[in-house]
Amino acid sequence: MNAHFSEFLLPDALLRGLASEGYETPTPVQSQVIPLAMDGADLLVSAATGSGKTAAFLLPIMQRFLAVPAHAGGTRALILLPTRELARQIYIHFMRLGSFTRLTAGVITGGESKAHQIATLRKNPEILVATPGRMLELLQSGQADLRDLEILVLDEADRMLDMGFADDVLAILGHCRPNRQSLLFSATLHHRGLKDITDRLLRDPQVLAINPVREQHPDIAHQLLLSDGLEHKQRQTLWLLQHETFEKALVFTNTRDGAVALGNFLMGQQQRVAVLHGELDQRERNRVMGLLHSGRVNILIATDLAARGLDVPGVQRVINFDLPRSGDDYLHRTGRTGRAGEQGVALSLVGKSEWNRMESIVRYLNLTAETRAIEGLKAKFQGPTKRKGPGKPTPAMRKARAAAEKPEAPKVKERLRDRKNIGKRRVPTSAHGVEAGHAPLAKRPGDPTKTGG
Image 1 (cartoon, rainbow, N blue to C red):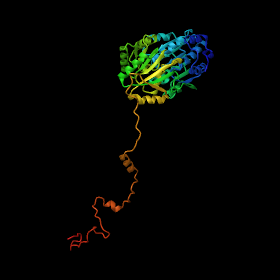
Image 2 (tube, rainbow, N blue to C red):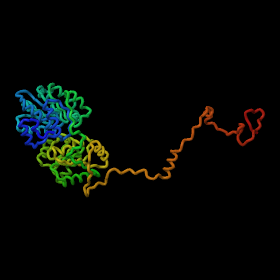
Image 3 (spheres, helix red, strand yellow):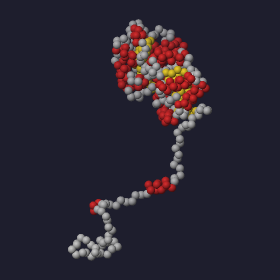
Image 4 (cartoon, rainbow, N blue to C red):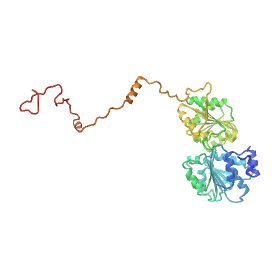
């Protein structure tokens, strides 16, 4: 690992930007990606959330554009992302790192004024940060032009595919300059739709697997808290928020209604809370995030909309009020804490119906999780009931076992005449062919077929 960013031979303006943001030692993903990206290689990178990949692709882009300025022309770099929130975070990151440069960037996302974005494009920013839907719309209308594109970045590529952006991304590639450098970042390289994108996007890429998605984050402590239901979870969450020390906390629910209900409960308990979910329009989302960034609220209740794309400094607690639906969702939620070397805690409230899913997540991610309890708020549910051993067999069990183990009687060979006589009454006979126990009877004259008198 490089000891300092200066070893990348970055221009002084970028080193000053890094220093102003407190960057000193590159993360593993930065150490591996930056030199290769500066050499112009196409890269396919698997890196976990919170690993520092934003700076890993921004710094090489900015270094190239400072070294070789373009005095005329259109967009030189396009960064595609799955969500509006993530696009805004990347733009803010760029503005901070580039605060001592004259490089320019613009944001193109849905939910914002199209007229304002067209005005941004007319200024020819060197870097565009965009979501696929709105970017494709502007390309098809002729308002955007990527013929001068030098670098294309797809960040959170697996998430883009999950959100149904595959066709939009492929259509955007058709508008890009073929002779370009491409970088793709994904939490996993095993997504079923990823190969279609990489085959079209990358040329002879170098593959880097850094901090694999299932590798436990060294700066996050994982905890479990057993719960007995909705109201019990609300009381436990309130206790945690009132008694634990943190700068900011994220609390995740699985549904919009659940987020609103929990937000209303906590607001009623005088907590500084805001709620973020998919039904909010862009202006309201921006307002909520502004409240969190400014510190006017220190608790954000969110659905999985916010599990990716949020890079909020100071998040020291992530609480899974509802257990996530998969191990990957668990990673994306908990990755909001423990960032940039800070210590974080991820705590999951686990009810009886969620126990098996929690066990699956722990196995899938190979997690080490501590089970804790809150005095006065302990759950009646204490984990699955242990199955009883076989114990001492009862007489009925011994009899049944003996019957099962008794060898079967040998089968008697069935003869043809026996099969013909099925259903007929059989009369036992002696060796002489008469009924057993009776003397032979005389025949009646003229009646050859009957016996008896």
